Each structure stands twice: as structure tokens, then as C-alpha cells.
Amino acid sequence: MPFALTVAWTQNWFCTLSKIYPKVIEEYAEYLFLIDLKQYSTQLEATKPNEFMIVFPYQFYWEVQTKNSNILCYFQWVQQTCSFLEKSMLYVRFNSSIPVQSDDKLQLKILWIYNPFIANNDQKAYFLYSLNETNFSTWSRKTLIRWVSQLIEGINYQTDTQFGNIRILNNYTLYTTSVQDSKTDNADWVSVRWVESLNPREAPELTNVAYQTLHQFAFTLDIANNLVSNLDNFKVSNSPTLIITFPVEYNISWFTINPTVKIEWVSLDPNNLSVMVSDKTSLTVKSASIIWNQLTISFNQE
Image 1 (cartoon, helix red, strand yellow):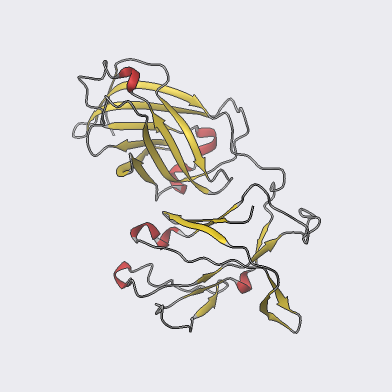
Image 2: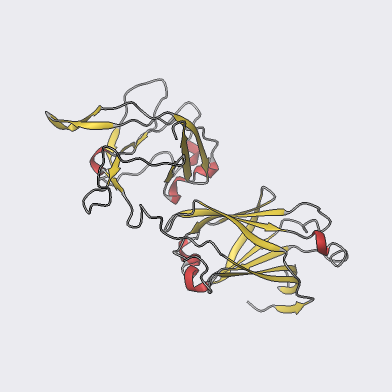
């Protein structure tokens, strides 16, 4: 793709990577970039910036183009067109020229970025940015501002979770495969061991507000390699959250969904290992929210 590049000037700080959530290795996350144009409002008066480019550090994000084919971009909470020009090089095309006289920092959110492992203070973890005025008919780019920032606090393993301590119990992880009427109790449960098409996710026109699908996830902590030495007394502190990332085929962001979530401790019936019974006092859910295909659950217990 040919394009002309004209660099107007290189300035001091104007963009930074403010937040990565969840900050978990090999998890899809939301990246929040803050853009501050206040100090450059005079220089930008005669310009119409309509494109923002981000170059992710290739050493870590070299798979970002293939693993993030369903990436979503939001500028000031409005979805924008975005795509990868090259590996690790993302461009965001604004629906209109962005305001250059704003006193507030502008928010650019990139969703569905696959987190790599990055150590703290890694000297290769630099993000490059440019604010452009682009003619999309001729692909002529005039770069107005350039900047680079380092990710100081990397994306790394915590002490207790270096190898991942959650073990999914597939035999007890179930979902519905047919459209469910919310007024009935019978559920068409199928174990995830079997390959079944999820309905109505592949056909949005089948969705009806009177219907709901049910998902049950069963998991325990992995004690096989002594990662957790005492399961009965093991505690997760600091107000943990449970994050469930659904496959991209769900396209949850297409719908308005208010999930109902329940979590409880269970054990297997010693007389029938295919049956789970409530064992301890259940946790209570404080909130459950969905962003794109990711469900985040917080609890009242700390």
C-alpha cells in the first residue's frame, strides 16, 4: 500500500498506555491509551487529525495481527474503524477529525489484544505512536506528532500463579445447545467434551429476549504439582475477580445481555461421582459485567 509521509514535528509526551485489563498472560485484554493534546492546541489549529497509529513492540506482539483478527477500537466511547497495516502496526481511522482544543485527555480503547509475557522494566517494551492527517483516497499521511512510551510495569506472572492454578473439570462443565425458554426449568445440558454448535450465537436473528442460554463452569485448584499445598485453607485475597472469556463466535457485543451469575462450592457425591452436591456456603456475586466476549465477576467477599 503506497503512501506519502510528511513529518511536521516530534513533540514531548502526548500519549501513554494507561491500563491493561486483565493484566494476565495469554488472556485477551482491554488496552487504554490516553492522548493529551492540550499543550499542542495552538500548533494543531490548522490541522484535521483523523488517524492514530500504534506500533506494538514486535518482540512481544509479533502475533498480534493473527491472534487479534476480531479487534475492536473505541475513541471517546464511540467505535472506530481499525486494522493492522503490518504485523504489530495498528491504525485507527477516526469517523471524523478529532478535537484538538480539548482540555481533557482523550481515551482510545483497544479491545481483544492478546497479552504476551513482558518482564518489568524490559528495555524492548516500547510503544510508538503517531497522530496523522491522512487522505484515505490517496493514502497520503502527514504525521503531526510522534511519541514513544515504555511499559514499565510488565505483564508477568504473580507468585502464586506462575503455572496457572485453575483446573477445569470438563465432565461437569455444561452448556445449552438449544434455544431456552426462560419460563421453563428443563435444560438441554451437554458436556463440553462433545462438539456441539451453540445456538443462537451463530444466527443472531434467532435471538429473542424471552430466551436465555445456560452455562455451567466447574473448576478446582490444581494441586497435582504442589502448586497449592493446602486446598482446604487456601485463600485468594485482595478482592479477586473471576474472568471468563467466551469464544469469538459468541459475538456477545452484538447483543444487550444482563447475565445472572451464581457461584457455589461443591463436592462429588461419594456414592455417585457423576453428581455434584453443595458443600459449603456459597460466594455471593457483587457484580457481573460483559465487555465484548469477556465476562467479569466480582464478589462481596474479600
